[in-house]
Length: 245
Ligand code: GLP
Image 1 (cartoon, rainbow, N blue to C red):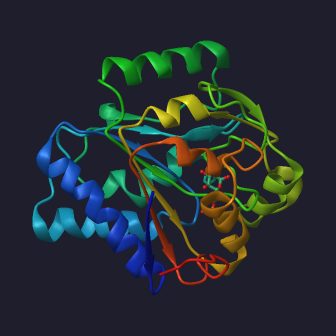
Image 2: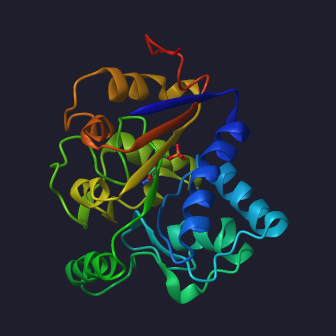
């Protein structure tokens, strides 16, 4: 795994966006895996800048998002579809029909998940996947203990994740308790993975994921088994690494 430590949040976003731009310029119909949360916003800002100022073209790009809360409609201001529209899709020339975000209000979540997996396959697989990390080391909504071969499915959120994510909701009771999430196996099939982390509050999860054993107890540590992973982290997130040279 490659570890890149940047001085701050904006520098982290610029660095991460560079890898996505490179993939898109080499393959205009690239398939991107995208993430939500507060971490990727500077990455999306930079992709928007590259589109506006350096003609990065999204017209043939296809995207798949990692996850969605079960029970939230697309227009709910905390749904991940809404997040993607306002933070990226509305600002670049991507075709909305090429953006795939799981539906949180489907009558049949199992079918939704199965069809999502099929769509990824039909698109030829994910060329580059963006990931963030939860405080407990989760990636997408794969909580500790998620099997390495898990696929897109309905998952229960842990108390810790619900508490962490309650900062985006009016009160903790409003945070959905379940989500639809790409599985560990789905994520590990992406050809290239860029994982971004900022803030000291994530330093423990980062150190465990990079320097600890690869274990499903810390989902992000399982990325050690992938052959092309780039960690792009800020100084705070890197602060507990023994070897940060
Ligand atoms: C959610 C998402 C994850 C994300 C995590 C961290 O739980 N499902 O994909 O990595 O939040 O969020 P933040 O970037 O806001 O710290």
